[in-house]
Amino acid sequence: MKQFVCAALMGLSIILLATACEGDASAPQANASATDSASPPSPSPEVSRPPKPRPQTGRLEGTFALKYLLIQSDIPDSAQVEQHRWKFMPSCREGGSCNARVESLTNDWKATASWRGGLYRWARSVKKAYTCGSGGSVDYNIDATYEYSIRGQKVRWDGENWVISSFRGTVLAKGLKGCGLSGPPQQKWAILGRVQ
Image (cartoon, rainbow, N blue to C red):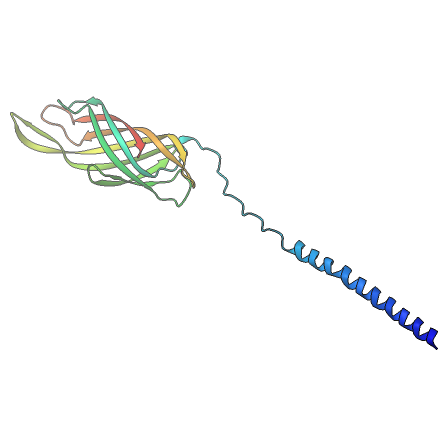
């Protein structure tokens, strides 16, 4: 009887020991699975910069300092060099090659620049652009049409778009009627613009 109890107790000890070993072995596995599930989050992808476009297809936006250089005129004593400032606001939300609103911060006028074939073009009418007279007196005023044409020369990345940083172009002013025996007055400027 004593041998049976001892054997039974010994068998019970072995079962308890085996159970305890199984419990210990399962604990590290639980910890390992918890460690595996707590992996670091993957970083969000960065916005890629598109390839640099041709300057004439860049986005026309911002304030520009301009230099007018007189290259043709039949008006005596005209200024050879003039300084102006323009501000452009594109009509498209992003990208380039779209129409833009242009505002002169020097002469207080506004117009819409139409983009086509790499050129921005617009025109505006100017009242009393020229005068006709003699001996210091004015006989009448002459209205004129001003025609603008500009093309991007350089572009820069602003973090969202390739924008035009400099441009070249021309301004052609044409009087709508002549003065005496002379034909309508006409002037032409080369213009250089750089973003401020």
